[in-house]
Image 1 (cartoon, rainbow, N blue to C red):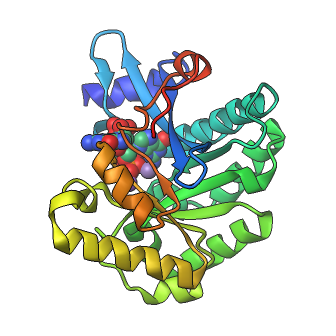
Image 2 (image 1 turned 180 degrees about the vertical axis):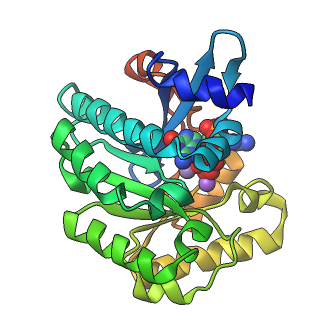
Image 3 (image 1 turned 135 degrees about the vertical axis):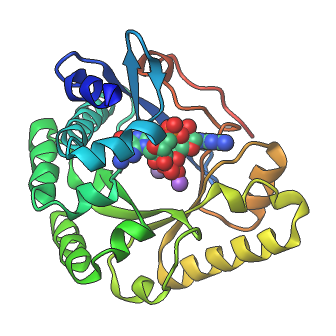
Length: 254
Ligand code: G
Ligand code: G
Ligand code: MN
Ligand code: NA
């Protein structure tokens, strides 16, 4: 209850900020996009994990306001970076299940694009399979609206939900982000290699881009490159960075 009352005041008290974690194109080695990750720095509680407060924000309905803030802040920052040295940088924003099902959602996306003047093709929204499958008919209509706007859709934590692969045939999905649990032991688990390989092959056939999440070692990166995975993200490439750290440039990996 205490957490909830703090959360209610967090926006107006300016306690949120975003970190940005790069996604690397495995062919060119370039950073093409970053994922926005919200951080809550509370004066007494310290840094509270989104894994803790996002579910609370969903239960209380506060996610509507917080989600809108994340969308606008991420788009404004990306537009600024595009004008200052990263001309083709994209942005990927996490959207929670409840937020995605809200009727205000599409309006918030349009508002963020208008406020930032970011071209829609640079914005990608990360949905989980469970968010999408909650109400599949409604989800399809929202995703079609996003497609009409020119906004991209990614499936986050792919492989961990109760996937019904049939949605890949019918829905406008641009990217699948393979959950990090398939990547963690990639180098010494033949089943994980088989699964990752199959997802990449499927992606090629469906013209869907594949991102490997949670890449923590050079071996994992090399393997993913050999398997023709399009993009990789993880601590080995870069941890989530605040704005200053991002602008100071990032370590390059090979
Ligand atoms: O950044 P970190 O690994 O601590 O994130 C923990 C969880 O919180 C992840 O599942 C991540 O997707 C989620 N998360 C981070 N930022 C946001 C956000 O802005 N909106 C939503 N809905 N979830 C987020
Ligand atoms: O659910 P989602 O994929 O959005 O969660 C992203 C979270 O994963 C972020 O909070 C980020 O801090 C975390 N993350 C990013 N890269 C790595 C990694 O290489 N290893 C681990 N363990 N976590 C990571
Ligand atoms: Mn994500
Ligand atoms: Na994920």
